[in-house]
Image 1: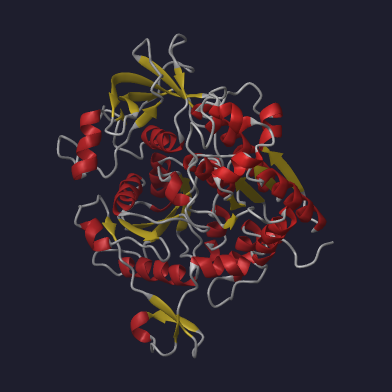
Image 2: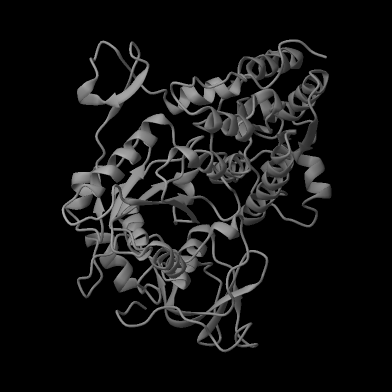
Length: 531
């Protein structure tokens, strides 16, 4: 529950009550937990239904304190605690905190949650970049010891690289704050809060590459905000809505910041609307900057003739340049940032890739996948084939064909493919994968690991698949011998986000293979000529 007086604190035990059930929160709930335990949230634990609903509807707790997002702990419907205490662990099973359960509640979507105060069992050790994950108290103490803490502190929150435009805006805002009445410094100190996942470094290295171009008194802290889906929605960071900006303002305030700037590229926040919600720090709306092509200089927008102003590259344009191995222009980004991006996002011929075929049983996806695997091998790239039937025998032996087990099967395939992609390999997957959510999870796993994802829908109609019925499965399903059979007694959710649609009706499999390989070459994942 949430109260004004208490927050997560250290517990006498190291592992919690020995008889307490154990639960590992999902990515966003784990992010919430770390922010509670570190003191970045002024909250003692996870919210009750009343509190979560109040925050969702009004942006305020029931006691009328502003708070932007529900801080909840989702649990499976079958998770029950026989005691009033649950030990919360990291994904490796190490105890993090003890939750005193105050309420188990169900939301309007039928999802279950636990509410209650949490107390620290052990400092977190799981996750990347631990050396940069200073707590708010550590940041405030360091600032007090090194420089005193009376002046303004500008927090810059970002999940994306800092290009020339953003760097000029940060320097300009820091200098403007230094000129404010009563400030005894030439510019504000700057704290860059890098939002990245617990398991992936994201764009952290590219952000740190800009360190020499930031004001002298700049420090960096890595944190994980509960926006896992948004963070990976684009190649260089995701969108920030009003509520996540307000949450960032609370986290920045806990670190001692007086002002906040969110670097969100093309998808920046509506600062006026955010400020209307009275955040704990002043959220800045930086003046736009443009590159003067004639002068070869970056200037504030008001000082650049529109006829000479060159617009920033979009994220898609940056991705296209990197995908084909081309250097980013130095007018757009510092050379050191560009070099780091080229390392993080190598040319697609050297980047991990998951080629994911989906379609009904008998659609021809396995035949096409085998041909595509051979074509990728001839191109000189390392490639692995994860065929649905083979995976069922080896990786997922023992799983049934229930929806839950099907989703687990697809998740396992996605995990293996993502790990192969992490090291620059190509994986060709050919399961049925009937559910959109499962396919989306595989895409997210691949992209979070730094690879790409290419979805191929083998859109052979049901009647054609049933007419082929090489294994006799459709006949058994029609006879009721196979329950929950995709296309007969269980749905197939046709993808709306396929990168390529292939119809095998009256088409030679070799032609379908050629279509897929041609698309991969056009996208830059395969060289123009085979080795």
